[in-house]
Image 1 (cartoon, rainbow over the protein chains, first blue to last red):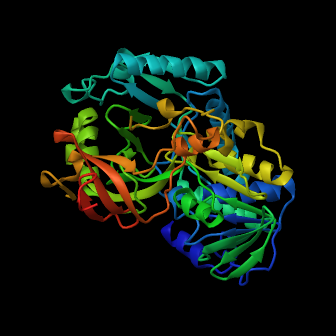
Image 2: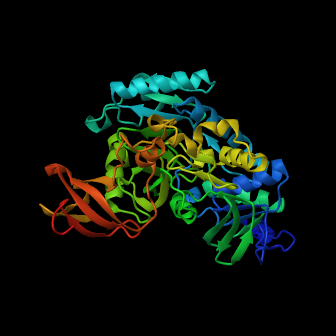
Image 3: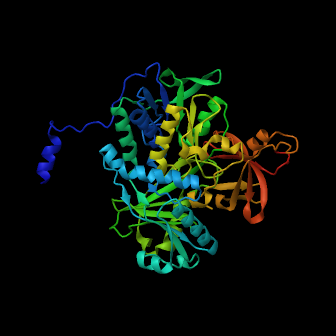
Length: 413
Length: 86
């Protein structure tokens, strides 16, 4: 069998095709220029081409596609949010995720695992009940479970939380899932490329030209492009792009770190999150434990890793799963999270005509990749905000009409 | 371990400190426009660069000023607010 496989691999009749082409030159003009070749930017390009027939599109990426937060998250997908706007939006995203592998004809290893958010205090239990009710109202599988159910479903977990953070119950969200994150970027890139979108890697945006209140051109490290529409989907680099236009936003950039263990036999099917202990953990298809925590507590534009983080996160993981004490950590990394004050994204139009923003994705961007791409494509193609993204406009800060997701979007509070 | 130089207590581990954000001038809420107030409340300048920030040494509740390069992460200078060093 291995010989047959090897012969197949070496056979020139079955070449290993490239996921997307590498156009040599930038053209002088595109209908839409997308800054940022991560999941969100590529998804927007894909849906622009597929659903709106806008194919004269280019995606500019400073590094390589999926090398930013698309490839740095902990791949958790869920929709058990706390505001009606958030719940509807992320629910649509979960629906899109479920069909995405077929859509792309590419295996994203999308695995519905179930998602437990542990509660360690009465007030946390109250929040879980509130979230469960709001979720159920919008038709999302979400329920509060007690210690007995947790003891049965997660027998390997120490319900005393290391003796100092006893688990009282949890919010259980059956559709919670994980996926192979870099394949998401490749899938969208391939789909967009096949429909005529150009993807330019190693191309940095240096400036944006505005003429009578409207976007006019994009200056890049490989020349200037004329265009009427620009989508900025650059996560942690958002403030730098906005500064080119003299725009301000509430985005503040903090590093978010994560790490993985060596692969072990499958023992953890669901995703387990604890807000009080600032941890989330799932087991990947390869058997590695994917571990994440809260943000680094100060602004920083760097993807360095710290020992403090690995030590602190390990201590909290051991509070829940003491038997992991001999497991080794093999990799650690960080991404730059563009945080907003209400833990909701900033999407849609800006005061500059033709300049669209897909930003403020902080620590909750990966799960929104399909729906963010779809709604941004709609906004760019029609000039109207998508109803699903209506609660996420930049204007909400001017009107003091925030969409508060802090209770459901992050672990560090 | 990363250290920060508290103006009162000297070099201490960074975990003893709390970040208080960039030092910003508040407009007069009685006279400024709603737009200017919303801008003050929500907008942040998160472009990497050297910034003057509020930091607190938590065990002693000492608030002080740090000049920090938010691109590289280096703390360049720390001093008490209003001290001659500022």
